[in-house]
Image 1 (cartoon, rainbow, N blue to C red):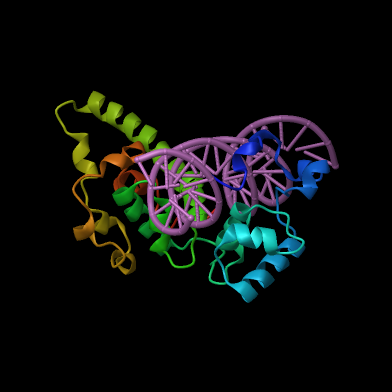
Image 2 (image 1 turned 60 degrees about the vertical axis):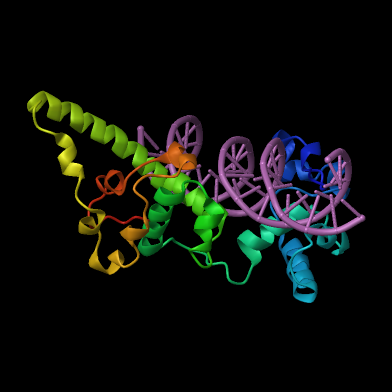
Length: 210
DNA sequence: AAACATCTCAACCGCGTAGGT
DNA sequence: CACCTACGCGGTTGAGATGTT
């Protein structure tokens, strides 16, 4: 279904070293060079973005697929791409939107100007999801301990504090809980989690970045 | 200082879908 | 309606960076 041959090459032999093989004349893969970036930026400056396969064919000196060009532009070269750490505000928004929409990264990214779906997806997987998993096991341990200590007492009550209580007042404006449906949409069950899960692992002054 | 482990993120792939013929 | 092409999305990979022993 794709006209640019993505299916014709095995994913297991596609890094930079391999790109310098005899096949390079056909299509380059792997990390972009500064020269390639310049060619792409100049071409888009002159012709506008879109029609990526045309671009890939027409831009002299650029032996990339249209798909690769699109990705490079959208995720890295576009002037309005924000680079650098995700702010705490952005993090909260990502968490809220993910709880609402699941892994709809491009949809989430549209709510964060300058951030790309790829960046948000990576951020979620490497930072947030990791903490959620940690907190799940942590909560499980706590639950077991609580059951041993006082079987009649519900340990779940402790997680029923509203998220607003745990978030700095400045950040509460980013969260409109009225917009959050009572339950997730059916397609988001893979990554169901709660803010309580996340914040239970955080101390107030903790640095969220790296 | 070296070896090993873990993390990050740019880039790839496969798939679904929209639009044109 | 069937087919083809192009685009966009989400999942995954792996090289390089960073941390730990």
